[in-house]
Length: 145
Image (tube, rainbow, N blue to C red):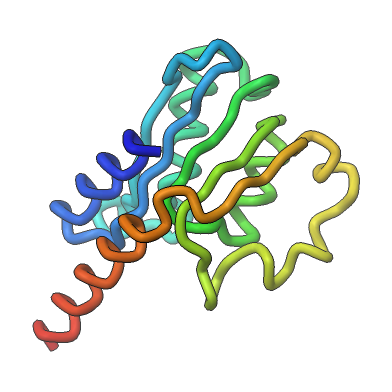
């Protein structure tokens, strides 16, 4: 999760919402890293999770990331949860909950077919640090307007 926080810091430095993600193999090796790129890429789909999962697929030569875990600093949205499940991610670990866009708001609509791949979800890991970076970012944004 510390590596995901480093990615979130990179997003912050690029004036992106500071969210970072890391894909880790079943052996505990980091396969890929990603951070939010929605502003720089002018794309609503360039969430940290998507960036990390895409890189992992390219690195492994397969879009199926069986046995891998995804660490992300903020609870994924429903779009990212669908992608996580489709990617066959086995374990999801995230820091802070997202009260506005988090998957927990829509988790009932995630089809059972996709849910079967995610065997574990852990939340609240380095939650304080994840929240602090997000709060710092949005305070800065409010001052700019």
